[in-house]
Picture 1: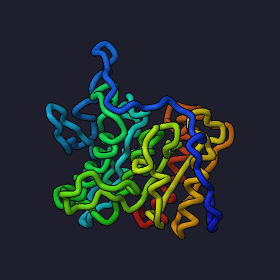
Picture 2: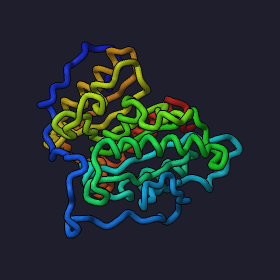
Picture 3: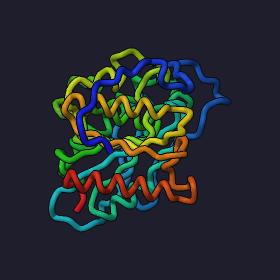
Picture 4: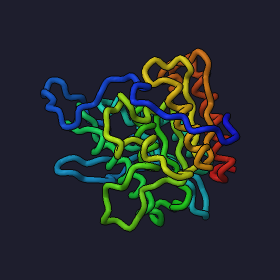
Length: 283
């Protein structure tokens, strides 16, 4: 964990090596992937955004936990290089946090091989998901001032972008900026995704932003550990709060439940719970 301010580390675009994203590239029908499900067992499912014939859904766990007080919320965005990915990726984490009194959400968003879209559309969707939760705070019994944006790899990129990148929906008076972020081996822009500075969480990180939690494997050969370190150092240099947990011998996606017998899944979940407890989001 990093607990003191360190010097700003410049994040060069050559740091991150990953499959580049080409926004709006044509995708042949035989290359398209199945849609994510409209419902997930144990959750309450809602349509949070409609674009043409696309209905984007999110799934809320923890609604059955009794509480008269508005609950904090966390929304997870799946990984998949903004090309693919399954909304079920963070269901285990969501169920665990839902049982502890949070509203824990997994959200779908547009990706290249389903919707022929790129980073701009994905960020816009992630922002819409955060905003929708706040707009429906009364219905969900949600505390709009305690909303965490979370995700892994490309989903971590989106979570970080909700905290840093300018809002796409300028007509709404409801903010899409979360109150904290939780990032799992996040892609924070560079070669992946190949985006202009305006869509780069690192480049758009210009103030103390929001409390930031990162777990990252030292042996990640897809999104280098150095990129997470640089991002955290920049948060700290701006007098923000960032904790970075390094995992020796861990590669990309190490935090998923099925990896390494679930050992890293349980440890990263425990560290996330400790972060949320420090914020007052968990008891």
